Image 1 (cartoon, rainbow, N blue to C red):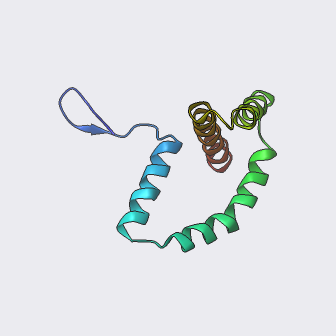
Image 2 (image 1 turned 120 degrees about the vertical axis):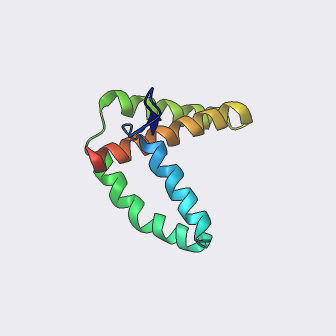
Image 3 (image 1 turned 30 degrees about the vertical axis):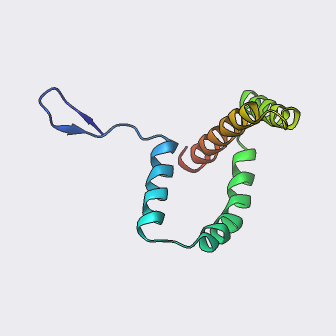
Length: 102
């Protein structure tokens, strides 16, 4: 949400981070057990991944492959590994959400 010059709220175009942060907040407020989250992810992620794989662009696939290669090659470099891991998961969320909302 943004504010106009006169102070009234305006809805912005949401991105995947908005959905993710909302889900995290909801799970925290409802005190959802980790086991439930893991079970949910195990049941829906294969389907969502399959749907996203059917639609991924060559460029996005190449970038995902590069992050996996960086993580594999930098197992002893925590900073580099975590940076690539974060990039991978941000891209992964965008690809999945684009598939669901596109």
